[in-house]
Length: 365
Image (cartoon, rainbow, N blue to C red; front, top):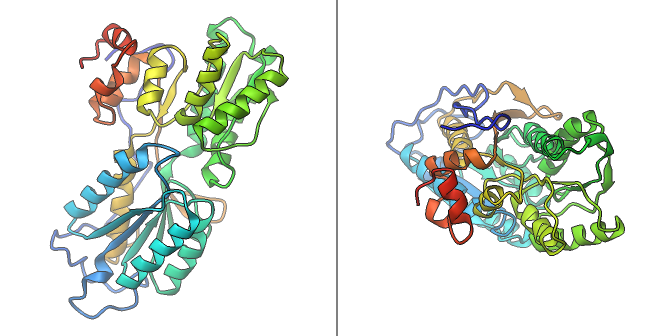
């Protein structure tokens, strides 16, 4: 596998010291050990206590939720012998609450929640009041029993690394560069972690933000915000730290209109992100192999359903056990890794003008 001199995808992308002792016997009975997480003491043979209830946040902020997380979670839980109810709140906090009420009424042995604008907090409290443990998935939730996500500060560090290296490769002194910061929605607890990690690396290189519009998880709004920031800077920009690929795509549409190509970061290894990386419009994307995160979440859920105690070697500031998965940085030479892992379809990525770039990287489609 070809590697560039600085992106270096690791051959091992693994969870950080995830130690789980519980394993399903495949019968769907969930083991039978009685714990606080046994959903209100269901009668013997009642399967509601062995069901995993999952709420995804939306389908707009990233294509990963429906295209990657849903099937990985459903298949993983089924393979372990447990039923699951995976639903999507479609970016609506009221719908989030309604889905949760319906799931709790029907019975859950564990809840796996991706927060959306704080909606998961009340659901967490309600579930725990019924003795149901809650796994915060991808985004932190105050008071959750476990947090399963990627190492989000490291995600930010990798993004910051992409910006610093991109500037140096362009012959621009990072300490003298005009850099715009385009973060994520502050209502998402991960957004602060991404910012922390990115700023740690960029500030160490002497970068201070020339402009920093309000953070959002929306490509069109991000484009509007960036365009306004660029105007305020007289059209001058040397790099743009962007928190994810969807927002990066919006920023790139503005840069394209102005005939500008500068270092741009992102994450998720989305199809659009990979295309922009291959085209040289996005310096790199942070690849978070969703199947690994889903596996860690499934293992955690199975352990809880079987009355076992998952172990993690990290914790959030509030003491929540944190099971972290390692992200990696992907440049043009590593796009094939994402495709080979089944997290992107070559035919979908290698369309139009991108096809020539795929040929250059030896990607078959």
